[in-house]
Every structure is written in structure tokens, then in C-alpha cells.
Length: 196
Image (cartoon, rainbow, N blue to C red; front, top):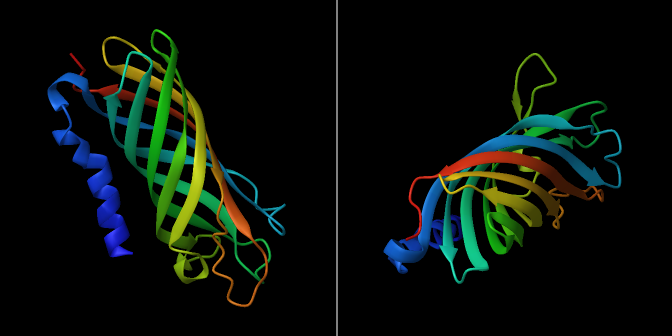
């Protein structure tokens, strides 16, 4: 787990040495999540509206293509708790999206790419006291992102994205139900450095 996390950090910030002065932009982003859990027994899991925020780097490969890596703190869920009716866990992830971007017009981009998520915590807040239920869920989550983006010349950028979870986040514990993250995101951000 620790080596995987360190590799993720290197991927995000290792781009600093790649022609940084000319083709690399650094920025921040944040916004809203509309999140749920899909799966065999998750029909009643409902939706939550919460936040995500983090840092990003975009490397321009040409006038039309670029690569964007991000490190995003994301509040997701609500994940059903096995054998506990009407109870759910709020999930906190550190996500690493690796996005390919194609600019269809000035400022407008289509985005697609994989994502790996590291589960930071899972807490049931439906009772009087918050209960840690992280051991019920897998540490790693894998998914794929699809999105649209718009970037202004002054550094402001806006995004709409959907994260489709591909892996079962339920850590089994004798149960067969499979749960997957499903997150719709609206974000706004700012690039502090702009390519020359």
C-alpha cells in the first residue's frame, strides 16, 4: 500500500522535470460530488452531495492533446453496511486521476482516463457516535473517468466529470454483495502557472 501511494505521488509531481517552463501548468481544483454506490444490494443506498478538492498538473503534448494528473481528496458514498438495515458509511478517498485531454475547440476539452483511489476512512455517522468501519471496505479502488472541461486564458477552468467505479469496494467478510463507487463531479479551479 505504501509503495503504491508513493508511486502515485511520483506520477503526479514527477512531471516537474519534463520541460516544465514551456509545456507544464500547475493548479488547484475543487467542487461538488453527487455520489452513490451501485451494486446488487445497494438500491436503497441513496445519494450524498459532498466535496472534492486537490491539485493538478497538465502537460501539453500538442495543440490538441494534453495529459493531466491530479491528486484529489474526495468525500464519497454512502456505502451500505452489511447486515445493518438503513445504515451507511461515508467514504473518504485520496484519488489519483490520470486524464487524457483532447481540445475540440479553444478552451474546450474532452477528457478520459483511469483513476486509482486510496481509502482514507469509512465512518458510519447514522448513530449517536461516529463508528470506524474502514475494515469493511477495500483499501484500493479502481475506476475510469469521463468528462468535459473548459479553460480560460486567465487560468480559470471548469469541469464536469463522471467516475465509474470498476472494482468491488466491499471487503467481502463472508458476504457476496459487490459495491462500486459512482460519482458525478462539478468543479472549478485555477492554474497558477500557464504554459508559454
